[in-house]
Length: 365
Ligand code: FAD
Ligand code: UDP
Image 1: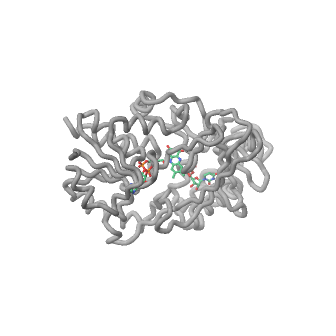
Image 2 (image 1 turned 120 degrees about the vertical axis):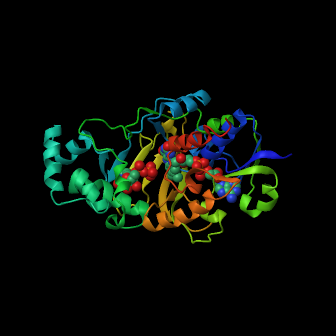
């Protein structure tokens, strides 16, 4: 059979594209190099618990169109992410809010908290030049030292003075007693886990798992008019301009013979010495009842070929390198590059869906 589209990768981007194409009456073949569909949102059911196999995923968005889109596929629960931080045994609320400030400084009002932070941020004059200066000018040195410095340096494998300021701008600072990590209007976890989203998006598609497109390119290209590629763009072009950098993670999961290990889905370890950045306890995402529990420790890791390229590193060098690959990609007549790896963007799930919907909106009209 000859297809309209060959879609490389069955993550949220490839699956959303497949769904839209099929709605427009197009035929699609999806190839996926892993032995399962779903990309990084894949969940594995173990001991009656949905385990977020490639790291904790919490759906949150301000985009009503995207929220309606996913809710047409699955039902969401009312999970709100309110992680805690463990700094050498001191438990503090995240994101940075009045609960955090009152425990740190023994104060109770927004006015008192602001006065302390205003005093501490005086050490930064002028426009913040790096992540450390940005963080201190947002929340002061105390919070920076206890909640940001260690975590960030572990996560990114470099000093906060060498990291771009924008990374930290993702995190809210609030002078209210509100532990909701996200400021978006809509939030939740799909009831039954994320796999149902991908299964629904791909219903009707031909799917081949365990197939690496790059290993049988010519043969696969011959099967379709257009290729939609959601893998690493540098790999697609055989690294001709050089390697893009990524951060990776080592995820170590354990089944524990106890009902509740940490009382919450996410605990960040913000000191420098603990080698992991977070411990996820999966059952809390869906309040699953089980006499056992499953936890995953996240250890940041330098990316090397063969590992999972979890996070693009959007600094100047990589930005310039990606621009070269992008120019080459834009000139292709029959190949589209979509998703977190092909567009080398720090897309959250809602951004990934929105980006595909934007591209496909007028494609078949
Ligand atoms: P991916 O999910 O990476 O899918 C790409 C797919 O292509 C993969 O299945 C891969 O195996 C396949 N592939 C690649 N190359 C080939 C090839 N040569 N041949 C065949 N197949 C190939 N977003 C949120 O909104 N909330 C969160 O809480 C959140 N947490 C995250 C935590 C972590 C640790 C990570 C890494 C990401 C998180 N995200 C979160 C982002 C979310 O995972 C992405 O937005 C989403 O997975 C993007 O989907 P994608 O299809 O673009 O990429
Ligand atoms: N961060 C931090 N302390 C924390 C959590 C996050 O300093 O306890 C910083 C860190 O630099 C991280 C950034 O905030 O890279 C963004 O965090 P977020 O949780 O949004 O990142 P994710 O890993 O989920 O993409």
